[in-house]
Image 1 (cartoon, rainbow, N blue to C red):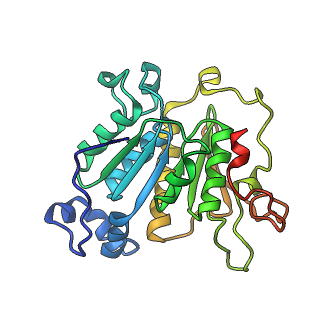
Image 2: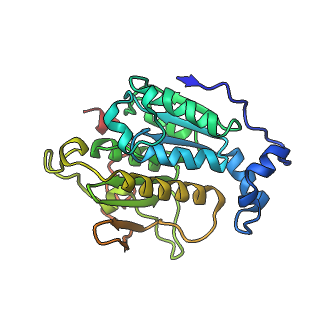
Length: 280
């Protein structure tokens, strides 16, 4: 794990003069204001992946003043990443993505503590990582990781903002299955939305299919917005709603989904009580 030299965020109720100016546009928003900005300052978030989704999300979370950002990624920066992974630069090609991301976060906001974990998230480390933060953001690019992270968040009782990118389309949703909605039923899990992953080989990788670079910025920014909302609590978020973005027709639509009593994680007869199934 690598940590920048940024100072730990203060826990005092008063912002420094630098912070007041830095967050001025948040502080004048009635929906955020001083109390909301303090919540962000005290918050910690885990970002899974410093790639297409994680890169823009990290920029906006750091700019927003999230006190502690933990990023896990075992990849290095490559030239082909730079078309969409805007937190990395040409001079950092060959560096671990966590190191590259940490440098830019520190340059953008020295009040943020950055912790880089140069590894993959697995069944062995997921619960510890997830339990150590307030909100989790999944920017991974494969279904096995998405199911692992969503299961871990549900078991640990942590909000999860998860997104996926296609060639010209993307989806974003927020999961809080450890809580109930207004009618008293549990909020849905990722498994309520997608009970099973698609068969192996049916969904092409980014390298195989390609991706519109700016689309990652749009979806990553929305992920950051949802993560900020999860901490501050303003407006109506994407719990129980899947935001679908189609850049070919420039259409944004939402699909509502609910708790499935037969889902194996939080259903009436749950069969997933730990992450052991992910070790197979």
